[in-house]
Structure formats: C-alpha cells, structure tokens
Picture 1 (tube, rainbow, N blue to C red):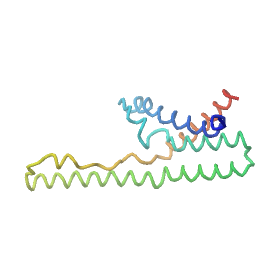
Picture 2: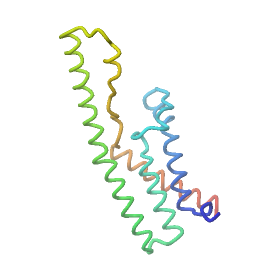
Picture 3: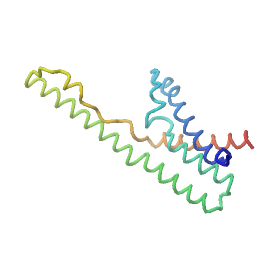
Length: 158
C-alpha cells in the first residue's frame, strides 16, 4: 500500500501520461494533422522524458527538501536525461532520416536497374525510427510540464 502513497513516483508517472497525451492536440494545432499514434511514440512536443524527470525532481524536492541527498541525485539524473534527449537521441533520429533516404534512393536505383518480379520483398523493408530525440525547446517545455504537474498534484492531493 505504501507504493500508492509515493508522491514522487505518481507525479512522474502522471507527467509522462500527460505529456504523451498532450502531443496529439499540440500536433493538431500546429500541423493540422490528427495523429493519435503520437501518444505511443518517442520525440515530439513536449518531451515526456523531460516532464517525467522534472516532475520527479520537483516532487522529491517537495517531499524530501531541496537540501537532501536524494534531491541532488534526482536533479543530476534529470540534467543527464534532458541533455541526452537533445543530444544523442536527437542525432540518432537525424541519422535515421539520412539512412532512410539512402535506402529509398538505393531501392529506386535497384528497381530501375532490374525489374524485381516480387514486389513483396521491396515492401518488407523496414524504415528506421526517425523521431527519437527532441529539439531543445521540446525538452524545455517537457521540463516545465513536469514541474507544473508535480506542483499541481501536490496542491490538489495534499
């Protein structure tokens, strides 16, 4: 039963669910496309990773105090996660875009060079996931989302 009383855990989980859910209406407003698949995807606005770690750190600060060791650990953990979201993961997504273009171009070349009798083989090719990381602004708003979720939950629940 103590698990249900763990405010930092529930603040982080709520921030993830909220950040993933709000991606759909944000995409609808800015791109005019209804994309419910964004709820289960990586990347996009706001960063749910950033929202989760910011909510966790904020909640730990509320519960344990900002001078506690666990707050320091959570804070450094959050910085590393946010940095990774804009760095390594974003670059992996950019590389996936280039590789997918190369695969499409190569496939076009092969199709023109010889007529493949079985198109099914062409269709079995799987593209790499391109939306992996975040723009710095997405991480920033993910962090703000997490902080807001933790503060609102704490106000409502306590």
